[in-house]
Image (cartoon, rainbow over all chains, first blue to last red; front, side, top):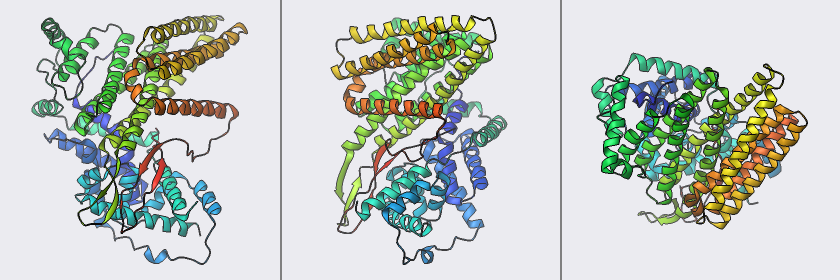
Length: 173
Length: 421
């Protein structure tokens, strides 16, 4: 029977248990590819540990992990072409389902589909929206992670919400 | 319903469902193993190890990973400090207090060191995990919770909770599944109580901090006071929820193993097991009753609800006794364990009375809702039916921070965080 050990590895493993799902989800809706998101999540924690093992100081582990993940996502975007704007796909159509029909559609939606819908929103709204409403980060935390002002984040959230509603209606027309 | 209200509803449902996306168990294990390997290949240097301990405000020049005899040094140091009153003074400190490192690094180390036997070590670790949560709750009630102090307490809680899990697994591996079940069952009750209290405190903070501000540009906005406290409590609540689900799952498996291993030994072994469980639950109910009745400073509402929980425990006990008398010993055992957990929860409500008092209505409401969900889930498993995905009856309210031209709008959504293994 082991006695209590206070090695930072235990604390880091604790941080992994706490944040791994959130980091994975963040990578998934930003990238849209599960396998890639898994690799990125793993790389995020490895890079975090590397930093700590070399003597780096981490004040806020959660923000630190998100920053690493964000940088990995940016690298991935650079390797790809930017996604086309979906604005031209979001034109209003003639038929508008009723509220009851929308209710039915939302009930059929599963978790993966909901996240996929989010991933269709153009950047940088997608990042702001996901961090605020899926990961429950405050404006202050998002601002710290992204380096943008809280006002900018607030505007992106507002515009992102409008786009998400359009995407939902468009997909269910 | 207006169009805007409906759109808000769509949005809240989308976000709620999106949170349901998680790593699968095998994915998580795979990544965990790779990270473990990476850590082995990239260990901390000694100087980095010292620096990392200091970052967490740990002052422990006496604790090293050397021989067992060296580990006795903290215990002797505690003895010396106790004589001077320092250790005693440290015992009720909270994260951020000057003597807090003495409490967690010396007092608690000594407690673990002097816990003999696998079960006692596991129980001590569970007490420490509980203490971390009580500290967070106290700080929240005192409005002293900030990101830094919470980060320390949260990582410590996670470490302690993982230690409890490891100890329970080791008890099972050594063949002592009864002790594993006992430790797991009590830990589950305490996590459930803390989870409910943290949720209630989180709701209270959120309601108090919503306000309207005018920006310097003159645009009228509806701005959330980026409620750090509320978001932090949401995070720690999610962490507790994860450990609660794990502990519950392990406990359910362990109870089934106890029943099946009893069936595989002597013919009346299961009856003996059920009889022992009956005695334990009767003792637990007596403890809880004593705790409720002997504490005069308890708020009447909390007392009433603790008594209600105790009545539920007694009802389940009677149900178990009926099963026992009709030789359904396996079912009787499971019912006695359930009654024991209810009695433990009643006892814990009295223990956390000061914190619960500040949020009593919300706490009791959430407790009752969670009991209903638990009952519905059990009934659903028995009827082999699935529950709908979009349960809109639980969760924490969140508000949107948006910047708009003259007309301001609040989008109020109900969401719940789902974290699964």
